[in-house]
Figure 1 (cartoon, rainbow, N blue to C red):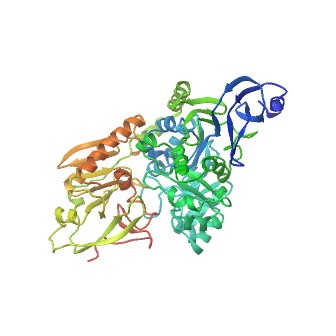
Figure 2: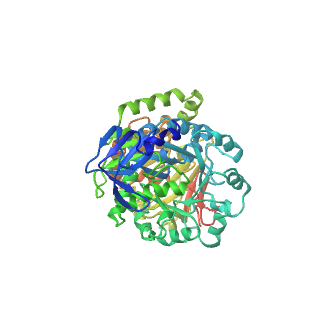
Figure 3: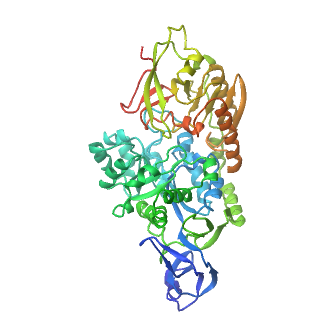
Length: 583
């Protein structure tokens, strides 16, 4: 219907298609509640005031809020298919997502992007997919694909493509690397997302010349304020491993509030079910002292304005009728979700009719080429058990885990004696160390990078995962080369997954056949399995709340300080390879 045909309804001359009555309405522009009717027609809000409707919905003692927007996330981190993810987050109030597919793009290139695009467009939400800017994340990583500006450009015309994904390789940006700048130029007229942990001063100035609009990597109020003062927007991240809300909220004030919004980045299945999505971030922000109305503002209109979307995030004429029905501002219990003015979820459940249509649409649009490349992605070269033995040395470099951070520290370990081979397990345990290996899983390349990891806590066996940001090679931590080797081979057999091996026996496993990243199972089933696997890992001494996700970030060469690739250790601060052996 043309908007001109809605004028009589908007003016109250003619009954509106649908009217929500007797509720308090969140005014995000003024951070207040107003008592009025909300008139909706043809999927948009046509008026606030007193209206009569063809359909009238009584919402006495309820609150109408704009639906939530997740400004930056990786659906792959939910470890389940897109439809399962949507089934969980839409009833929790998220009706708009800006998804960066660089996880699956690192595995399957353009095919991986198309897979998420097809699956995402079938869901009852506003789906915006970024074009990944760094595949691989840096020139020092080797993934299943390498995407240039020429590779990405044809996708710009695809429905659902929104912007250029987080520009992670900031050293290449500030040093004028031709390849990354070709992608930045390609994205001249679309949103460009940032990724610049700790970047400040002249280097930040140089980075911003690329027209990058936002960053979700700020971890301190000081860092956030500098970036805001230089025109950046800050997406406050509250993920499963990295939780920055408490540290960044002190930076938010009445003068700069419009520069802040919320993002989840990476949310684990159990956290999605037990805590929630953006609704959880809003509640937690309120618990930390932010006013409920400001928290809702940051989860809706702020996100839309930062992203440059002009018809989302508010309850006002000409905005999409993406609405949440909430019982109170203290608990923020979401009773119903309306997408384009239509009831889409109620009491925590996606309506069956909506759900069935989305699943059918995905099945219809998925090509055989996409299926082949996505579901057969683990291609190990010839590796042997001895590939996981540490080389003889007196002093080694060590990756040191920090609490609740994907940032690591660099430290050292000196053996207690001059051993003929690798140090004995009992000594590694005594120094809170485990062996760490990254195994190339693409194109039959037999490459294994070795390192040492401190503060993981494992005292027996091995853990392996095919989720290894961002190249997604196989990462394994263990004390026994035999167990590490067996865990990696089991992942090959499953074509992706997470495995725990103890004394030569596979104790626990979860198949992740979708690009080696996601399961073909319900989210609840995946979450329950991960709980059992985490309990098993804890029984082996692991002291991390999210042991598998923690491991998955140990190969990411754009997050300081020391990381491991299939070619060996990498010093992120110096941006160069370094030797495991010091002497």
